[in-house]
Amino acid sequence: MAHCTEDANVEIFPEIDCLRGYPHPRHTNTLCGHITARAELAEAIKNGDMHHAWLFTGREGIGKATLAYKAAIFAFAKASERLQDLNVSHGIPALCQVQRLSHPGLFVIRRNFDFKKKRFPTVISIDEVRKLRDFLSHSYTEGHWRIVIIDSADELNVSAANALLKLLEEPPIQTVFFLISTNATRLLPTIRSRCRLLSLKPLNDEQLITASQSAFAHMRRDETNIASISKKILEMAGGSPRRLLDIISKNGNEIANSVEHIYRSPSNLSFEFKHTLADRLASNQTLQDYELFLALFFEKLAHSIKEAAFNQETSSNHSLEIKSHNLESWAELWETFQHEAREVKNLNLDRGAFILDILARLEYAIQT
Image 1 (cartoon, rainbow, N blue to C red):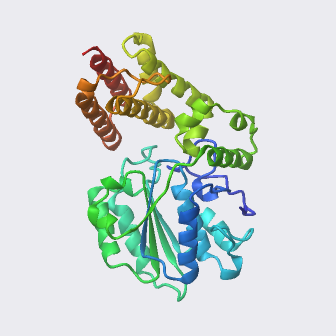
Image 2 (tube, rainbow, N blue to C red):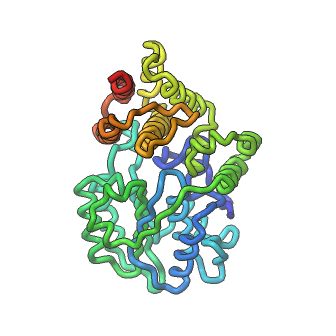
Image 3 (cartoon, rainbow, N blue to C red):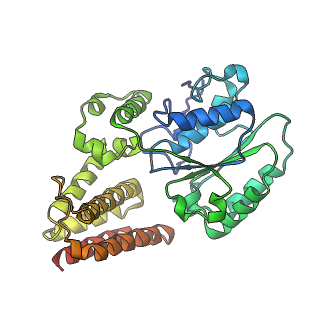
């Protein structure tokens, strides 16, 4: 995919959906996988019969935002500039404008960095949707699309979600909404019902490696680590290039090893290990490490519960030995952890204290 004349990788402010050291999804060179979804979007754009709202669902880091930005560029491009699979000709104006977030037909709703508080807000507020209303109040140019990307719709607070719903109920002419979601069940049913669903699957190992190699090449990094990663690391990535790139980073590898250590001996974790880990993950500077830790920690727990539910033998990757008669209490614990993790995020609570708490409750559950 093309690069703009201006260096598209230089950001003047932090971006919520940008993995440290790698390009934002709108700058991503290669979108791997999702062939059916790409074809469906390309056909709809070419025919001019786009549904007014699309909901892209799937696990984090598999290309949902990249797909949305590629579709926007494709829609803004001239017919002669469009190629296959939502790709466009090199260096066209629409590509550069979208990458710079300067296209007059594009509006992005997301959690924007608060310079006064030096952090991202925990939710998308109604103020962002009000800005969208102002954007949509301007007259549109005949034959041109206006595209709204909401990344992610899961983060809309109640007021913002209800305000968005009103727009989806009476969509402005020639306007398309792309909603991105990792957990569509958390959206209002009335929002989901007004969207055309595109459910994206995790990438297979070949696609995963190709996507990660592309990210390395984009940043002019050595690709050796990608080409030689183990099957175990690929499994931990779960079909997500973002997760894979995060894990193979120095910090990510240490986080993954910490999770492995926890599940190897959850009842014998030292005081020093637990508090060092909690202190490290409590800082705003290590937010991505904290999010990676929770993702790996919860997935490992879910895997152990699944093994117990299907009476499978415990695998060699340090799953917990959960007895079938305790299955319900373990499932409840997992749901409680998930709920509390959202509260920690939404209320900006102490992340270090939360880490210590879940480790203590995991140890207690093992012993009872």
